[in-house]
Image (cartoon, rainbow, N blue to C red; front, side, top):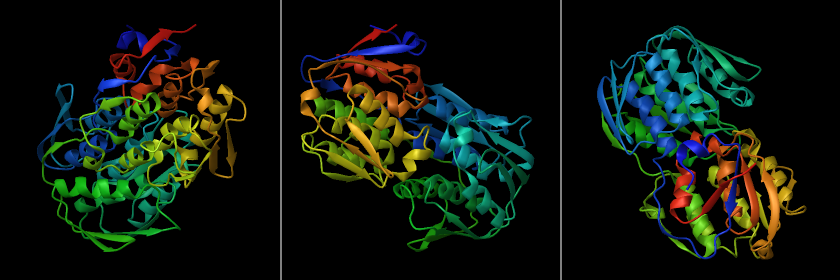
Length: 426
């Protein structure tokens, strides 16, 4: 069996097709979305907060490191617990905050560093520097916060004043709900009430705003939804809290799909309806395999679309994925990546039509030998999703398997625990 250290240092990993159904128990890690939210909220709450069930991955590690740079004490007494001790104020860091390709951390901290004193640079890797953030920097200007981005992307320089005055801010959240969440989370520590109002035709993954509001209220925020496009946040500040993080619904989709694809039964320890994360809606879609709907709207479960798209390759009929425009500005252009790599498995298996993705289902793929090296574009979700294809097709090799460490460092070990064979590939 390949160990964790080996898998995260090798260049390529070949999946061995399984001989029968995958059955057993496997627990997804803690939610990345919730972990990064409550880490920031705990940093803005005077006192000591305890976070259990937390995700320990590259994205959350980068968030914790950035908070430490700003004077927050974050300790890790065990593998799933974070203890955050804070004065409730953020200090100006001595160096730029480097956040890799962590979208949540980058967007959230771009707003939060306005509460520090002095200029703060929020930066990321080459991939993050291509991901848009201009809507957020423009919105911060409405609150009197000077924030300068680089051609609409990071790095961003924020001139922190140690406080925000409050008022009304409008934000176009159509590209990412993270912009909206970033503004909402700093609002309770303003000097006066803040009203956050949506502009634009739609809001991407609105369920994640609900996730943000629930986390804020857990730390004592007073938020009132004034209509379906705006919220009023009272200047209550935050109170330290104890928070239990639920499992990651996006990660759960790989296990639900692995069970569906092999005719197995994997107990993940949490019923789909018990999740508060919007990606849990994917469970109901995956349960329909091999007769997935002809049209799947991915707007409210965006991170689950790579999982379902790979599953759709084995479906009885074609599937069109709509509402996925935002997939083009994730860790990579996921729509293009999915089409390219599905067609690498077999030409004609997928195509793009505008921002839609069409996958031509073919159940006969199962059992075939189709030697394919899957490019993952440094995107954890592309790697984890295409590993599913290897459960039924011989010869699927995942390049850069270590990129799964962004959100699920133990992914490959979990597959091995379910009986999936993995081989180091040349």
